[in-house]
Image (cartoon, rainbow, N blue to C red; front, side, top):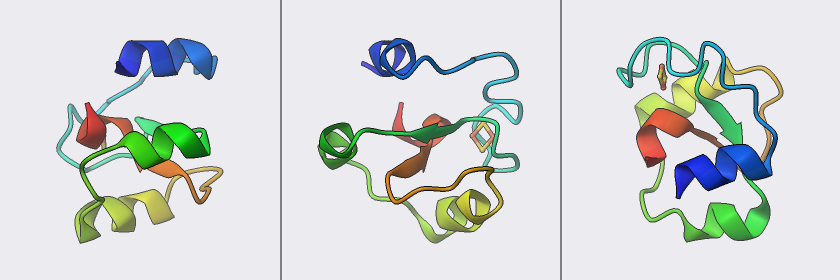
Length: 69
Ligand code: FES
């Protein structure tokens, strides 16, 4: 589950999800390992991709955590 992913990736969760999932911030930016990324069922929407463009350290396996929980 997502909590395991956060722990696995040693993500600092302070300030995580500042906009409470309304796609108005990028504090929930997560970088997944490729095998984890492939397991995410939901594909990113255009809105999520737009917000990801603003996220620090964007990678090919980035998602916004609030959209994949
Ligand atoms: Fe703000 Fe996910 S909590 S975009």
